[in-house]
Amino acid sequence: MKRQFLFSAFLFLFSCSFQSYSQKKEEIPQQSDREYWVDLLCKISEPVLQNISKGELKKNMIVELSPTWDKRNQDVTYAETFGRLMAGIAPWFNLPDDETSEGQKRSRMRKWALAGYANAVNPANPDYLLWKGHSQILVDASYIAQSFMRAPKALWEPLDDVTKQRYINEFKGLRSVRASYSNWLLFRGMIEAFLLSIGEEYDAFALDLSIRKMEEWYVGDGWYSDGPEYSLDYYNSYVIHPMLVEILEEMKKSKIWSAISFDLALRRMQRYNELLERLISPEATFPVIGRSMTYRMGAFQPLALAAWKYGLPSTMTEGQVRNALTSIMKRMFSVEENFNEGGFLQLGFIGHQPNLADYYTNNGSLYMTSLSFMPLGLPPEHSFWTSPAEEWTSLKAWKGEMFRKDYHQSVKK
Image (cartoon, rainbow, N blue to C red; front, side, top):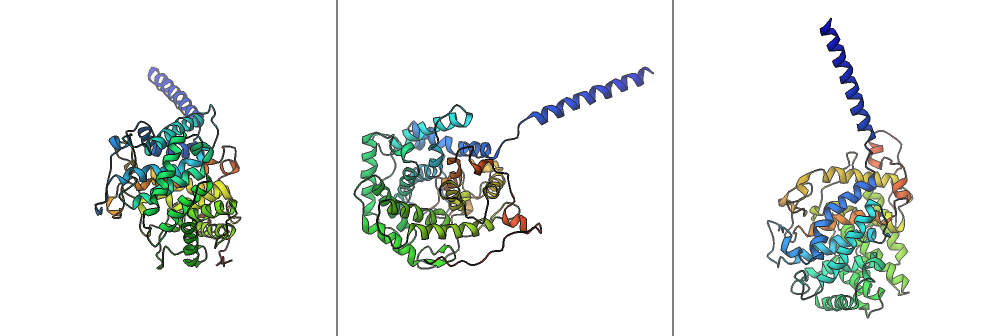
């Protein structure tokens, strides 16, 4: 009898304990998509911005070079790291400060970024970037210029006059760099478009040439060739569509004629976005094709840019795109080996895969992945963040659900 009583009492206590645990578990608020994005962006960005704000990026960054590195000056790493990161994170810094957890993180990181901008062009600072000696600096200077264009009031205007003049001088000094006959023409164009945007003297020929060559290399249905010979990779995402659209937007504002109109370039980018979204598999993966696959989420820059600044194509919803991008991020960054012991990105696509790095790749190159975070420039109450999550195209298709048919679109005029 005593034994039965003790057993009953044990069951009762266990039941109460389990019920209490279950209730506590249910009380834990689920992290929203935006909270996840902010936390991940901070994880990627903080080691870079905190160090460069103190002039200690070169001192503390754990640098990793491709196994096939072409022996160029490895100091290009730091310009790649800072420039590419800032181009992606810039829209977020446009938002005003507030007392929320996100707002406090943004305010702190913006201060670090502004200090980093000053250090990057100060010859007396240990983190003065490599502005001469290798043509690669043209590439990453263009991403710095792009970051200023994406957040002029937050990132350019607050800089002191000395720092501003140093950037202008460094940018103009890069006119001596011979750009490759490829997407590199847009790097020159982006820097000239920035100079145009701040009322500085700009190279009209370089600006015009970058646009004309892209028009010549348009192959149809939203795709450009990266130079005279077409190659299937994500350089339409990494460089071509975003830079072309943003250069043309500035030219349109300044009433400068161009071989392609801004509206036409935007329509082409939106067609590309339709196809890009369909490349996302039902399992939230995307094809691992072409060079520079270590740029990870950078493949979705045009989709992120449209969501933030121009609006998504009418053929897809905000909830659909947010859900797809969030699902890819979670799949990709759930692997801890994406980061080294110092918190910096490591060579690889998912995790640490040095063999995937091209001869020009260092782990600073990988900060292109930040370019997918541009929708954080939309406030939390924006419909991109508040709309219900929806299934993306391939997920619907492979579940046997109704989805929109796709058609070739002529976007030539």
